[in-house]
Length: 155
Image 1: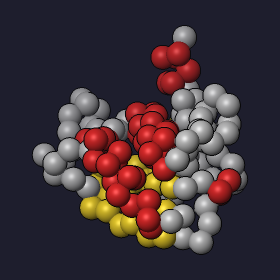
Image 2: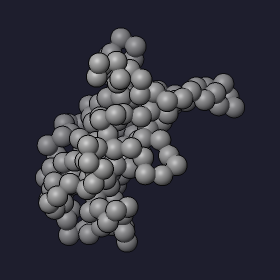
Image 3: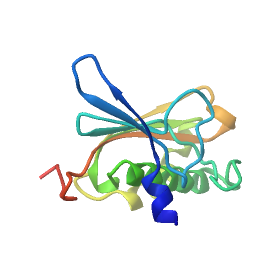
Image 4: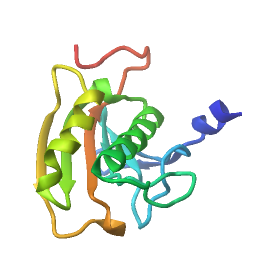
């Protein structure tokens, strides 16, 4: 049943002006969007995710704990969105990390480094004045979509 539901995560297809198709993606294993945006959009062989914060998709609230726990949940949420998009962490080419406090960089980086392998994606990390729900960290990614055969497009 869950596999069937995951197959239904694609919400819409939109034909762009140049005839290319883009599709919005929604994963039932990631928190619902808290605004008028998609969890991810797939276009031209790429996945563009919305920023994810450390919200538990089951409760709809931020996970308890500090930056490490929130970063771990952020990455779980992104993993679910990437999977629903036909991608994964091994296909990520760029991340942007938003921190409420740059003093949390080392702890965030420790958790982050466990989820990515060489060659690491390009990354920008910035401190921001405030994040939704007063989260400590938010991450967005750009990734390649696997081909129909499931092969790695980056090779």
